[in-house]
Length: 169
Length: 414
Image 1: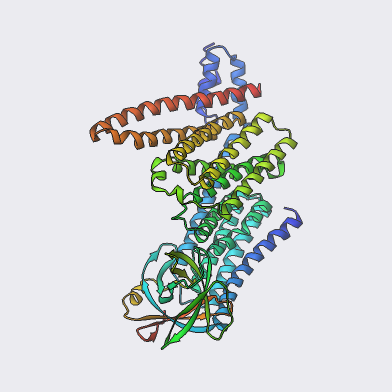
Image 2: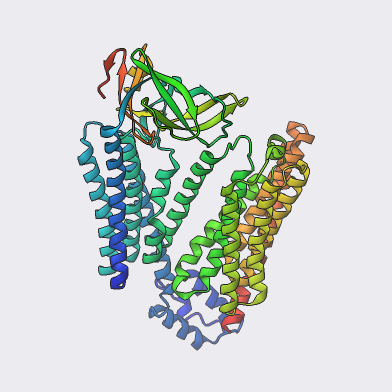
C-alpha cells in the first residue's frame, strides 16, 4: 500500500469515528437546546432481534387533518403545537416552517386518507428500553412523552412519563 | 505396457488419487510411456505444482476468516440489541470508536505488515460491521428511528472508498449489501410502495444491471480486476433473483399496474446510473480491445434488464399477461446470457448458476400452472416423475456444457 493510500485509509477510519461522534453530538445538542413539549401516546411493545426491546409510540398528533394544502406520501409537514392542559396538541399544518411563538414539529407524511387526513411520523416513534421492561410501559394507564423540538422543527425524545411519574430505565 | 512395478502402482501419499488413476489409464491405453509416467509422478511428488492446493487452502482461510468476521459482526449487533442502558453515553461512544479503530488497525497490520492478507481483510470487514453497529447503537441511545434511511447511508459512504483502497472484494460486497438496504429504506420513505409495487423490483433490476456492467468494465482494467468478481456476482444475483420473483403471474394479478401514475426520481436515477454504466463498459471494452461479440453480449444483457425495468414503471396500463410474458422472456434471455458468458469467458460458475436458475424456473412454472389442474395424489406422482426426468436432463446438459469448457481450456493450453 502506497503512502498516499495509507493516509487515505487512515482518513476514512477517522471519518467513521467522526460520524459516530457527530450523530451523538447532534442528538445531544437537540436535547439541550430544543423546546420541551409533552405529547400524549398509545404505546405497544414489540421486540426486534437486532434492535432489542423498544416501545412503538403512536401519538395523538400522528393522525391529523390535512388543512388546505394537498399533501402526498413522503412530503414534509410542519405541525404547529398548542398547549392544552399539561399536554400539547396539533393546531394546524403547513408545508413549510413558519415563524411563531408556538413550537412547530416537523414530520413526514406516510399516508393520506381521502385528501383530508394525514398519517405522519416525526422520528420519535421508537423508545428503547432495557430488556424485558417494555411490558411496564405497555400496561400503564397513561403514557406521555417529553420531547424537545429544535428551531428547525426536528424532535427528539427526552424521557417518558408513565402514570404521572418520570420513567427511569 | 502394464508395468505393475512402475511408480504408479505404489501407494502415493502426495499425488492426488484421481491424478494417479488418470495417469495409469493413460499409460494403459498407450497415451504415455512408462518413463513418462514415472517422470510425471516424480514431478508431482516434488511439489512443483502447488497452485491448486494453495488456492484451495487460501479459499478456505478466506471463508473461515469471513465467517469469523461476520459472526463477530453479528455478535456486536446482537450486543447492541441487548440495550446496555447502564453505560454512560460517552463511554459507549468511546468503546465503539475503540472497537472500530482496533479492528481496522489490526486488519491493516495483518494485511500489509505481517503478510496475512486474508485474515487482515476479514478484520477490516469486521471494522466496517462495528462501524455500522456503532451507528445503530448511537441511534438507539438517543431513541432515533433505526429504519431512518440516512443511518444506512452513513454506514455505506466510507465502504466503497475502503474497498477500492484495499482492493477488497469482501468489503465491496458488504458495501453493495448495505447500499441495497439503504436504497430499500429510501424507496420506502419516498414512495408509497403499496400503491406502486413495481417501483422496488424496477429499481433493483436497473441497479443489478448497472453492477453487471461495472463488473465487466472493471475486468478490463488490470488495477481493478480484483473487484470485478463481486460486482458481477452481485449484479447477476440481483437481476436473476428479481426477474425470477417477478416471473410469477400472481404478482401481476395482485399488483396494481394501473395505479403507476409517473416515474419516481429514484427510478430515473437508477436507470440513469444503469445507462451510464453500460456506456462506461462499452467504452472500456472498445479501448481495451475486447471482442465485439462478447462486449455486445455483456452490454446487451444489461440493456435487456434496463428495458424491462423501464417497461415495468413507465407503462402503467398494459394488461398483466403482457408483463408476465415479457418478464419470463427476459428471465430466459438472462439464463441464456449466463450460460453464453460462462462459455465465452471459460468460467463454469455462470453456466452452473444459469442451469440451476433454469431448473428452478421450470419447476416453479410447473407448480404454478400444472398443480391447479390435477388432484393431489396425481399431482404428487406427476411432479415426482417430471422432477426426476428434469434433474437427469439438466445434469446431462450441464455436464455437456462444462466439458465443453474443459475441452476449450485444453485446446487453449495446447
